[in-house]
Length: 186
Picture 1 (spheres, rainbow, N blue to C red):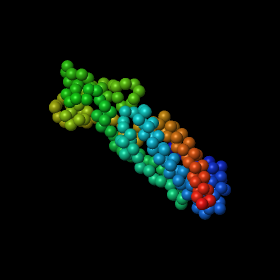
Picture 2: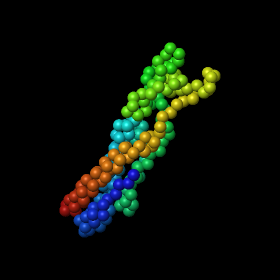
Picture 3: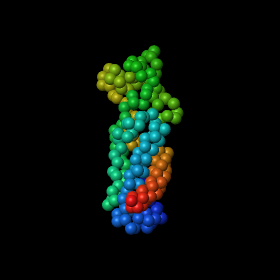
Picture 4: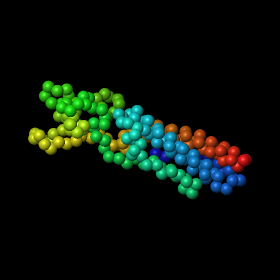
């Protein structure tokens, strides 16, 4: 994912703020940082639109590296482990699900397509979706869904994040240029 200033935007910022030393770089860094925050919000919203996961879990995996006037580059990285399947709201969600004569456990990771049956799985007392490994009673294996970085790597999610970030970057640069000019007049 890449969001950049156009050469025209850079030229305009430098031209309008040439009489203020360092003001163009400061305005561009501030605009990038605001766009970065907007991209983080858009990432959480778009990921939630595609998957059944809460925004706090998404934002907890993100790390922002903000731009400075000396380094006009800002990045968002997402690192995280796979999310337990229980976090995707299985139905039914009470312990004892999935045995003979019991309701079949269904889980929906994505919002579209409904919930799918997970054969041989059940809700353990520890509040997790488990499955027996083999015919013996133990060991139990916990089941997991995708990690947040995998969810965010969806093409629809990435396209929306880029669009929001670019729109915000353009708007914020104009605002920051006006702000610097206004402060210089005081």
